[in-house]
Image (cartoon, rainbow, N blue to C red; front, top):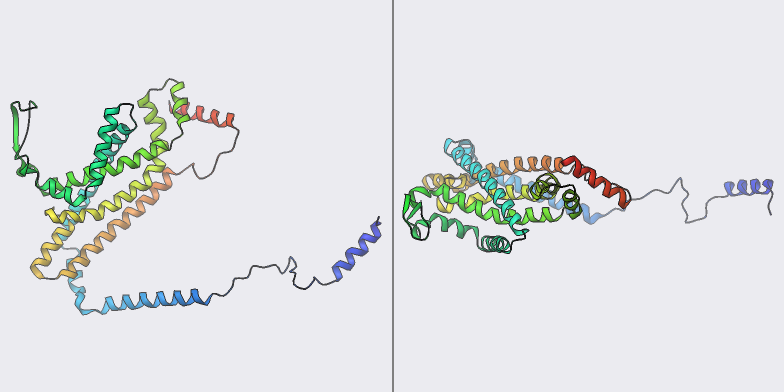
Amino acid sequence: MSTPVDRTADEGVRAADPAPAGLDTPQTNRISHPVRPGRWLAAGAVALVLVWLGWSVAVNPNLHWDIVVDYQFDRVILDGLWVTIQLTVASMLIGVVLGVVVALMQISDSRILRTGATAYVWFFRGTPLLVQLIFWFNIALIFPEIGLGVPFGGPKLVTWETNALVTGFVAALLGLSINEGAYMSEIVRAGLRAVDPGQQEAAAALGMSRAKIMRRVVLPQAMRIIVPPTGNQFISMLKTTSLVSVIAGADLLTVAQRLYLTNFEVIALLIVASIWYLVLTTVASVGQYFLERRFSRGFGTTVPGTLRERIGRNLRFVGSAR
């Protein structure tokens, strides 16, 4: 057994001796980043390609940048841009409402409601959107008149000509919104399924109705999962509206096509439309970021506690929702 004097002497000897070869002392134990010449070469090559592409685009005389500048804020282009915004917002609003209704039908206890919702999603997700747009634009070939009256061949109280009622804008709105409703239903259904069933059971135990449980307990928590893909769908819808040009829907791409068919500045007008699409998607992306951050508040960390404590917190949350 060593005495305190011996331990002090041993510590002095260890302090005087240098560290063994090949071992780093705590003072010199630093992380060294190895030099990767391949990564530097790849980064330099990518930067060179980007600079070359930018220079080629800027000095290419065939792009006619003066035409791009002249038409960027042209009245006709701005009218088409406004139609694109209207189509996007209206189609997404109708699509979200349809998606919520169809999602509730899919999780319903009624077999008929589930079958109808499944058939709706199956058909409109399984057929191309372009085909649906052309179909709605030519719906007058099937129903020359649209009216209200007694069903199953009964007398009609009021009728309208389909061609006068279903214009290019209306056909575009029908095709975009009904198709979007099929995709939004799957997004909403996934968000509803992600909510802990214990939340609903606790709310039902407190006497809340199913409608109130859905409105006060389930939907607020499901929004954290529903909002991000919905933002992606909105951005996708901004670009999908360009398909409306096939049925002359007066959107941004449609008016750009009409202009370059008269002045033959095809590339310049396509660049004008592309710049506006980039502006719209950028603004929508910023809005999506803030929405996601708002609905994700309170979900960044896991709340600790025993099972009994977690159940108590759930009950208090449901009680406050009442």
